[in-house]
Image (cartoon, rainbow over all chains, first blue to last red; front, side):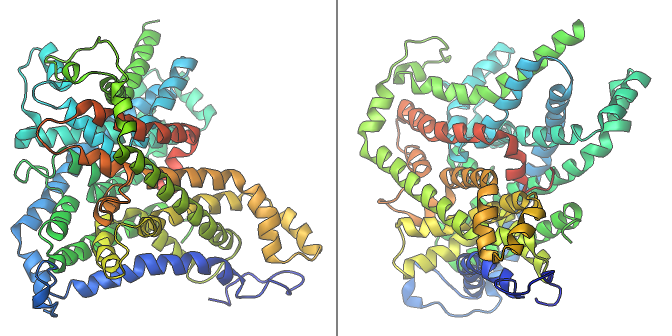
Length: 304
Length: 269
């Protein structure tokens, strides 16, 4: 790692050696190695063993690819991946559209004070502890005294048994996720909109009175990198999603909200089949690495 | 004129949308059990402080908040100590493997905690570290170090190189330059990254759920543990939720300008 290192221009003494960056990097890298890579390797080894800690007498024998075969032929694993994908394609368009509307409202000139207030409140959902979002969801979507059913009543609809019907539970976690993460999309789009050079936007506003034309021809190019970031980061987040759903539904009723992280957690820590759970986790890790590669490829050109 | 009114209505709608669930929780935390269970829900009620009195008298809740404070503070401190020198190297030097290092840091942001929770649970069990502060503090470094490194590298890059040239001519070595120039001038970025570390550690549930038993349960774990049993103590649950969320919300408002950077690892500026 030495020859590409920038040589010190004048005095190559005292702390300008080729190994200097190593001294600065070593503490962080070694720590992350110990707490990140080492457990990952341990998980990889575990994934090739029969490893049920409720039955320690059987030992933990190596079984080759048995766990992987079991996982890949397990229809529950696939259906929970599919459900995770369904969740993603449900929340993403809603968050993108709502986020864009919010960003445009915040970008529009005028209304200084109200606009600052709205801009600041966007941070609140993002900071709310994910588990607490789940608690709030349990309260809002309660069948008997939840405010969601009261709102439905105002609109002339009958009450829904949100958390004990498959469709209702899925809708409820979608709504809570939309509440928490729409501000994230809005803030990213707002950053994109503010990159449009002022003169160009002014000129375009004089040329056309159509907001849609302005959006399509002037603002869109500045929004696209943000959109890419949103799509990739949200996909990783949905694969990670655990806290809010665990608190709200525990994956139920049945398997209606059994997203992938919830499912693996159950196999590992309810059934204590750690061999199978590790194989599932390794497969999830592989998916994540592909997503991260994509993210870097598309958004970190300057680092490459 | 009509456009202005619509704009104002739109902005007001944003405020209502983002604050409603939060406000609804805070309102419930001041309600009696019978007010919470009222159907349809009541919007006007006589507030009571009883729920807060109850949770602070409950050693389980106050103990959990202390645990959360210990874990989040120490993990943040450690990640700043370990992360800032790494950020210095990344901001100042070009070396082979740099982009791989970045990739590794970013992957840490993306990876589901369940991937590490399984092996760390087993390793902690064998090392007799289950239900200790130290195991949570260490595992939280997996997401805290990357966030510190990212934000601080960015800040360090913006420090003008002339300052360093001058110090170099005076014979200062790299460690002195890091300590005397980069640390003080990078302080705002370090503070922002520390706040993010704190928020992420404070909010974390999965690792805490899996790696703790009774002694070091953190606040989110205790809040969710109320969620079992037949008649739920809704007022206490919502009061606990409020107490958990309030400090991080204040922190988040302080760093609100950097929120996007913190959550995207800087893909969009």
